[in-house]
Each structure stands twice: as C-alpha cells, then as structure tokens.
Length: 72
Image (cartoon, rainbow, N blue to C red; front, side, top):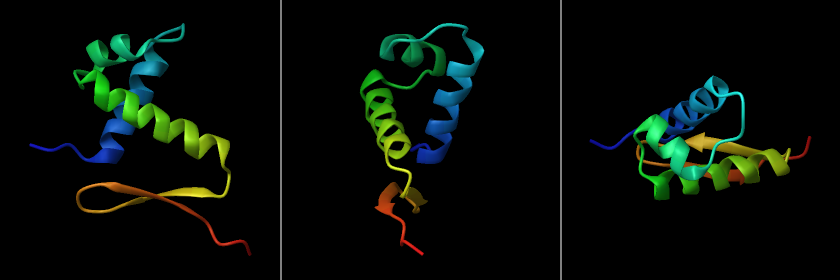
C-alpha cells in the first residue's frame, strides 16, 4: 500500500529528532523502513521548502505539490 507523502515527511523528522547527530540517507532508510531512493526524494523536497519561505506543500490524494504562495 502506498504511504501518504506527508506521513513519510513526518517519519523522516521523527527519525532525525531521535538521533543526536546528523544521519545519512541510508541511516534514515534503516530507521524508518522507507527505501533510500524515497528518503532522498523527500529530503530534497524538505530542503527546497526550507530554502524558499514562499513555498508551500499541498497534499493531494496520491502525492504532494510544491507551489509558491501568493504574495499579499
């Protein structure tokens, strides 16, 4: 069964919060049970969102969408 993309991001953050030191992609994969290619994909998404304060994540039924927020 396919996992919810936001649940994957939450699992990555939980695994990072457990450890006291930085983790590699492979360590995160072992800790979460999520394939390392998937971990790499979501770490890139997290990095992109953190660099761009106007970026937002939109959850759809089967994926997530990144888009720029409207400037108010």
